[in-house]
Image (tube, rainbow, N blue to C red; front, side):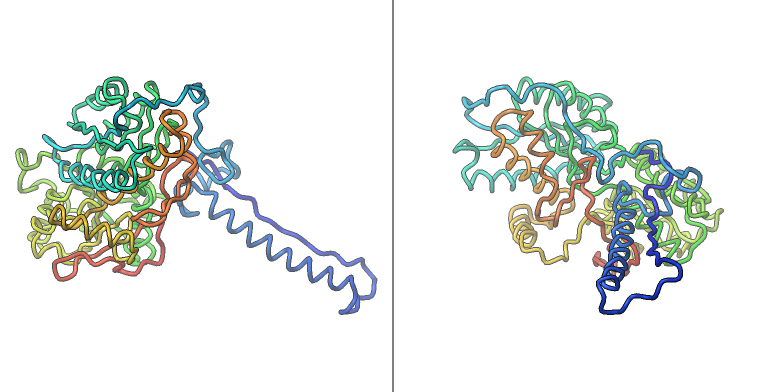
Amino acid sequence: MLILGALACSLAFAVQNPTGTTPPDPTSPEKKTADQNTADQKEAAQKAADARREVLYGNTPEELKPFGKFVHEPYKKYFVIGDAPVMFWGPGREKPLVEDVPTVKIGVIAPIERSYETYIGRSIVRGMQIALDDANAAGGYKGKPFESVIKNDSGLWGASANEIVSLTYEDKGWAVIGTVDGANTHIAIRVALRTDIPIVNVGDLDPTLVETKIPWLIRVIPDDRQMTYTIAYYVYKQLGLEKVAILRANNRYGRFGVAQFRKGSIKLGKPAPIEINYEPNYDKVNPDFVDQIDRLEKVNADAVVLWADAGAAGVLVKKIREAGMKFPILACERVVHPEFLAAAGEAAEGVIATYPFDPDSKNPKYLDFAKRYRERFGEDPDVYAIHSYDGTMMTVEAIRKAGLNRYLIRDQLASMRQWDGISGEIILDEALSNRRPVTVATVINGKFVFGVPHLDNVF
């Protein structure tokens, strides 16, 4: 995403009195007009301030605008208030609705086997299953049941392309939930652009995903851009730290996950002293993270930002603490998982993680879902199961309103800019990505406590 220069012009007004004239009587129409002008000035100034805040893409804070210090006015602004949302301009809406189907199929692509991300894929499938059960209990689509078609996201380059083709032409699916792997998701949406099938993403937080302007995609989960902005403002503005190192997975998830933190650190005048990566299959090549810990010790960092999967993050945190490093550790949403707590043990205490929603919000919809999820699967739902449920229910609603025509289903999904989900309010911006502010959680007495620490800024 590139936004050049200042995104809003300052607003100034002046009320003039003719020189040498007698000031108007306080009760005169002229005085009332002047008072009204002053009120109008204040209102206009407030609107201008609101516009400056709202016009920035992805909840970007003013200080982190790309090139904001160098270019006065951008040549072009994308995905901002007043800009047209991502649109599909092709044909297809005129096709007759399909009625002669025994079931209405919705695909899901998720890592369910042969992947280190299976814990995410499993949650996505479970959240979708409960959503479709609820949809079918409410009558399905004109009395016909919704049916899931599950495809494995193996993480192999290009595998998701084959699955999108299969879901479109062989399985006759009407939409797709997924995927997780960043590289495969980018491939999947490009194939969907050719096969004309809507994708509702519920688990890939890559900030660049929606910036492709592919109109067949919406994302219902907040992304890493918002979470890294939140971390940057906490460590630099609130804690006043200077040297914050980056430790991440050596894949697209890690590289793009920390990208906005890396850039934001530079713009705030505090570039990260080092960026260290690890191989996702660390258990086979470097189970003790010797090199990573050695490099981290040498930079004498004030804190570390950790972008890793749950199990790997747990081992890394344990090794950091065993090496005697006591600085704050701030991590991504993937660490909010029992696997992280089990791997880290006592070393997990005090770790802070950003999270795309607040499970302590007492939202009755969420509480009901969590109860049913625990009864069915024997564990608490995570962020992926929750957003999978929301994304599936949005898809069900779009199909019910649009009918069985993929182009109309796509239009209906794109029009659902605000949705009251179990994760809270889903707010789709012009890029059709959820911009609900994120939250944080801290490990206290062996479990994550949400809303701690208090943050002065969330994005």
